[in-house]
Image: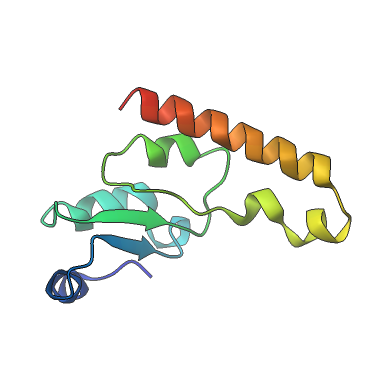
Length: 105
């Protein structure tokens, strides 16, 4: 889960710099990250849970986001059915989105 403000204070005491936000989409998405992170500019956030090709660029275009996790690239179905070409294609599309999002930021 996305850490509440008290957890930000604890993370600060431990010298942490990146906080995981899970499940991102189900917990309010980028709007929640921006609102909760505003008073804590020293942290970056890594959302996972609900990240997909459809919202990856939106997340990565935000300067608070360090990286995103997304199991959409390697679902159980894709692995179990040995759909290696499809996995490769999803990874390549994700890389393109990352490059585009980070080149404009």
